[in-house]
Length: 314
Image 1 (cartoon, helix red, strand yellow):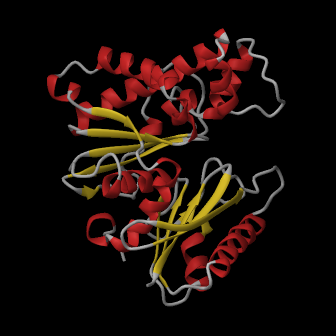
Image 2 (cartoon, rainbow, N blue to C red):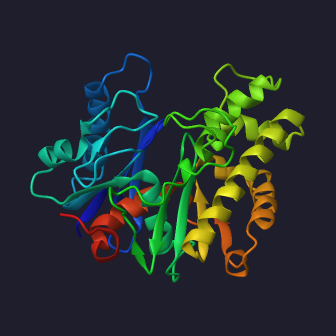
């Protein structure tokens, strides 16, 4: 049986898997993203190429049906010249062209990583059986993807559903996109950590992450708790706006910060109830991504396996 080589490229990790036609992840592996200052695009590509080569070789070299990739944006689409905000080494990097050269004759399909989470959750996860779904990633960055009428909505440039750049606080912190008060600027893990430090949080490690922040919030650290409430409130406001605009049925939230559970979802629900006033909007279900950390990989595989719903380009 042939399998899809599925890839998830983020600011902190590179993940890859072999996925069967029913969406089952056969084997997976990951490596840290080379993202230190001074790392160039070729070093990053070589790290990705090594990860993929090792994964396929360790699995015995099964036949591949195609390559599906989720990568942080922005990117040109469908050409997939990628410029992820959280990966400075890649600016206009020809990722799809490189993968086509590496895997000649195979379909290579690349979309935004958060869009792949949305696809995965709609195909086999929390949005299964529903036609109108927003999938979100809350991690190093904040992104999203939209399924409306049972099909992926790409928009004019392939960037539809980018909820991370909805404005939730016009006077809020600057965002790496150049704006101010974007959801991503407020709720992404590194932004939360920076805010908490400014408020007096003293983490146990020098390179603290959102995971450590959430752990301290569970331990009743008041500043860490305030940071999680700040993130949840911002996400709830953004979802209320998106639901009023798109008449959604399900919002599925994945990514590392979503693992914080009630610390994030309770203030999120409170903010959503406050701002979602139309009756149709209040019916939406807001849930953790059912597929967990594999959602993006499963969605990347669906770019190949379920192209009728999720891939409309060449």
